[in-house]
Structures are given as structure tokens and as C-alpha cells.
Image (tube, rainbow, N blue to C red):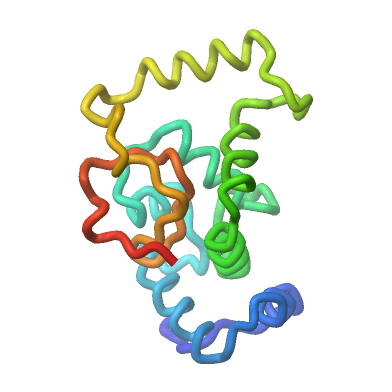
Length: 165
């Protein structure tokens, strides 16, 4: 890859216009995207994603990855990366709660059915015990090493190197 700017698609132009991204902004985001794209595929796979956020694979991270991968091709394109970064970083607390709720409301009913609650409880029970109860583990939005990570992704006291945008 190595370019300072990506190929401008119509989708990317619309995202830039919507969020007021300049060529300079896009160039910085693209440089970070290229750093994260370890295989130089022009897209981030699940391994790149988890490497970027510095976590072991978990339910919450998988949900975020699937949500960001809008075309369901199991990769995050540069367009999806920019869209997700801008969108998540502008979420209100209510929007973040709705997103977190939607991770468990698989049928989209607006309610958690018994099976969905059981799944939630099993996830909570399987979490590392040293990550429970720490305020530093739950953040509104994190921007770490160029990748926006939404709440409920658990880390160990990594808050010092996180920049909230």
C-alpha cells in the first residue's frame, strides 16, 4: 500500500463530507489503517482487529467487529474503518447503551428473551475475575492505536495510554 491517501470511492467521499474530514485528516487515518493492516491486504481481518485493540478474542470484540463490517465480508475496509471511527466516537451515552443492548437482543425485539439473558449471564461469568468491577474497564469510547473501541471491551489498567476522542 504505502500511499498517503486511499482511493476515493463515492462511499468514502460521502463519509468525509458527512463528518467534515479534510484530506489531511484522511491521510492520518489512512496511515494508521495501514499500520494496523499487518498483511497489507487493504483491509483488517479479525487478527488485525484484535492486534490493534490489544485484547484476547472475546464476545464483545467479535460483536464490534461484526457491527463495523457493514458488508459482512469478514474484513474491515478503509471505508468501514473511517465510518466506524467517526460514528462510534460521536455516539452519545444512550446510543452506546443501545448498541451494547443490541449485542444480546439477537432477534431485535427490544427485549431480552430468556435465552438471550442466559447468554449474557454466561458471558459475564466467563469474564476474567480481575477485570470485574473496575471503572477503568468500562469506557464510553476509546481510541487506541488508531482504532475506535466501544464500551465493555475489558482491559487491565490500560486507561493511561488511551485517548478519548
